[in-house]
Image (cartoon, rainbow, N blue to C red; front, top):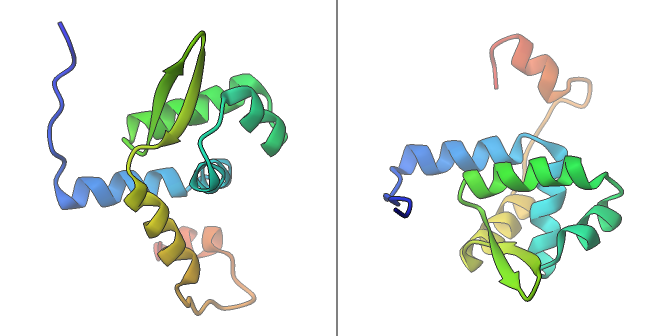
Length: 114
């Protein structure tokens, strides 16, 4: 029996996207896949991380619905689940964000800000 897919609410979609972007490695993965689909071994080499660690991050991104695994012969290629995600990443990177130079996001989170 196959998996049942449902349409996520707006809040759930944003929460999933935020969870994915909360980790620098997942951000780097999404940006790499924004450039072009890739195989895990190539992604691990490109990002300079171990394959098991990469696999965990890819699983998270799959579970969040942001990437898909595409079988290519005996290998698997990863790509963004929807081309609009690439545009969203571009828009987020281009957004002007004012931050205090002497505070990190982690410090703000400790104070209940983020």
